[in-house]
Image (cartoon, rainbow, N blue to C red; front, side, top):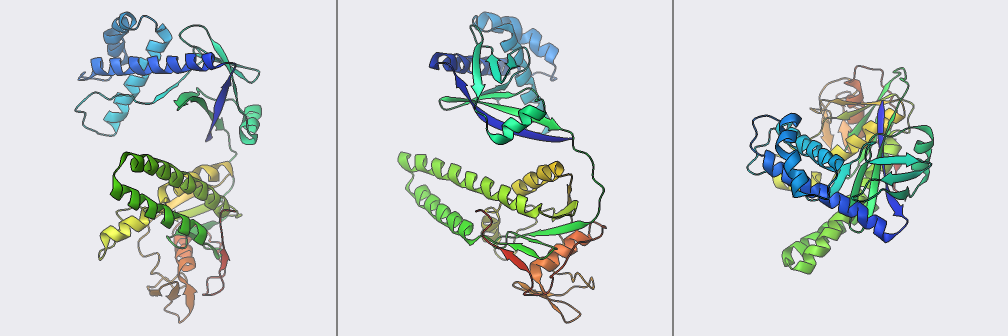
Length: 370
């Protein structure tokens, strides 16, 4: 079972209809915060206790709110408290909802012939989603769960979650993927992915952000938010392209290292190394690679990263790495990243697909993003 989420903008018949939906979301946020303040400090997270404590008072406090809106706000409030408890966070004040958005169920919407009929504080309004090829294809083939209705600025968006049944494929062999900073990925099949243009853009954005942070003015902070959003979008786009390149293999198992910032700290220069590594979205790549592999009837396996770049993939003994070269104990010189990716694949205990491990024989793909 694979899960896909697609977000699209809603097109309304009039501005008044869109404002009705925004007022509905604003009132749901107010009811959420009201229930959160009333429920703060309760002994246990129970929907029965929350409903008895807040429902009648909320109907009196917000006379324009419908019963389903209050019930939805109560459920969202309880979910927030349960999430905080499961994450073992200590609450010093009641959680407050700032953004406009909520999941809607069949009692709050209908979807007929490609049109959403949404509940508002008055009567239902119709809205048409702006379709693009992937979303259109999923709507024709699959059904979606309770969508997320949200507001960003002056526009209203809806996020549709599709659950797709994926037939299981027999495991044939595994490939290893060694992730890095300058060489973003190297596979055991001898492919190395480098994008110097992406690195140049990231350096430029980081320099502009440092300049703006040193000023501290209102306009600088406003510009800094735009740059942060731009950098985030560039990272997401690059991550998806890199994941697509890695999945262009016949192997059904993709092995990667279980990387984290703590494991990658340098003893000599901990702050500098942490700043460099934080520019590479390892966790985001792992997330995107995992769900895309499921759609392709493949799976991603995480292995222990210890000594992968210092172990000879042929003899299994420790060797010497100098830059991009690895000097094995048998006298051969390998490409260091490809050698590490082969070691990663070997730790899955599956047959390994590898070739071109000698230095100078790897296939370099640049740039990744067209």
